[in-house]
Image (cartoon, one colour):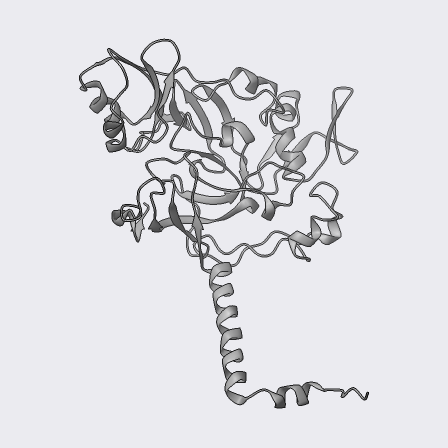
Amino acid sequence: MIRKKYTRKKITALLHPIIREWLKALLIAVFIILGIRYLVFDLVSYSGSSMERTLLKGDVLVVNKYNYGSRLPMRILPQSWTNLFFSTDTLPRVQQLPYGRLPGNRDIQHNDLVFFNTPSFHHLAIDMRRPRAKRIMAMPGDTLEIRKSVVFKNNIALEYNDNIQFNFLVETRRGKIDENFLEGLTISEARKLRGGNRYLLPLTREMKDTLQKRPGITHIRKSPADFLPEINPPFGKDAQKWNSDNFGPVVVPFKGMTIDLDSANFDKYFYHILYHERVKPEWRNDSVFMESRYATDYTFRMNYYFVMGDNRHNTTDSRMWGLVPENHIKGRVSGVFLSFDKESGLIGAIRWKRILSRLD
């Protein structure tokens, strides 16, 4: 049996002209869609509760990538292939592309809602780390401190926005709090505690005032803050004494900022220099060595940001896993495209008021 050899021209000739035009149009459309998603904006489903009230479970977020400038590819090979053989800490430098962005039309600003890769899970490459949405609370060069739940930036107290929530212990005179009432307040994480009629509820100031007027409510007080995890604290040993309501102070580094490598700074910034600046610091005989070279100071190569969730007691953020380097930021959360309440019925699932809404 003789097999016919088809050249590219012969194969093309076999296709009907109409089919060729459709395939060409389809290919162009795919490239346009990929270009828009990669360079302009993306639609991302949100399922967390750390930004509750500002963002809701079931929101489809609009992530604006051109504002800050689209982040350029960070790997020569597709990440899914690269991760089969290498991790971030062992990948040879020659196979890592330098960090870069296209020109944008807006700088990152205080209070922006940013979408970024989590600055942890260092066995994964940056673009494969879990994406999150949080609020910028401190910019490069700022000093951030939290005192009794109040955030201070450069020693100036910041006002809460209306969506900031904290956990409150709520005691009732009898039985359960009406679930319909809780749904009306859009409380999604009501937790009944053991031993009496007590609840743990995330509340804004307005929600707290409304609940306090409710018949049967006997007492409401803020829940004590949990201490932060002691495993590999990103801000050194002193951070083990901090908690989510009393934190810092922390100076957020900016690109070009130089610090003296004394014992305090070495301990405070060791984590960020090692994992984000990708320089290996060592402490030997009361001296610091960078990449085995004696050093008395260090100059940061990137800008960093301190981010927090609006649901302050029910979030993981810079207090737990450290500052966010600029190369982890993907874009700005600028609005909500669609929103679905997955716990409601089919008709009530769509949150009509949130469709195409802007987030300031």
